[in-house]
Length: 334
Image (cartoon, rainbow, N blue to C red):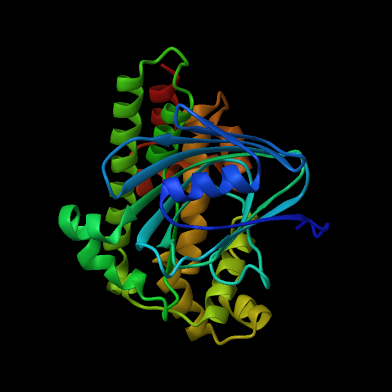
């Protein structure tokens, strides 16, 4: 990870309008047609607000970092409470939901995340990178009145005394929905654009919630100590940098200074599965995305995600998805 000193930008989270107004003031930006535009010595920024319903806010984020930048987003305990969903589209981002002064994490893959806006967050942009993502803020009141399945299962996320933060590898269906959103033609009418983005966003949240509810043993109802949460994020980053064999649990436990049983338990709370299964799913999701978006052969994709045997790769892929890599490649190339 690049440890070069970063410039710092700070603001407080909250509703979409509250965030946009703060950034406009802090960075001397302009807001026109629901788009915040910033030309700053540290970055070029475009945040587009999509008008929806009261209590449901969607932002399309597009940032080019001209310098190394730490964006410190302070938690907000006073304003209305929101669940914050984040869907990564492009670019590596350092991300920490607990302590912006002590620890930062680099997202190496497309991830989906969910936490409360009461939490502090750090986004670390690296010079020369362009990052794009979609964020959704859903107020506690909106959830109680319109999305009870989310509120009833995740209301504990609003408890500031607990360490609630959930991550999932974004499946290819989410990546393709993000692709649809971020590649809409400029001449798309406002009505059609809004409908597409709102529809895809609701579907992505649905995919995330569905995956959370399918986690074994309702692990999302458990919280971790801050330090344990950081260790699990750090381990996730290590795993998503690897396309070789998954490190053995005894080795990982020794490296991170915890017992094997605690490592397995804590990892499952945050990521909803075991370390080996998470790592294999990461490799398979990466393969699925490449097959569906790039013109590469099955052999090339197998090697990219760390399989020396194409037949073994195809067998594991079919067992996981119910279709062969060739079927996916042909489907998305036509």
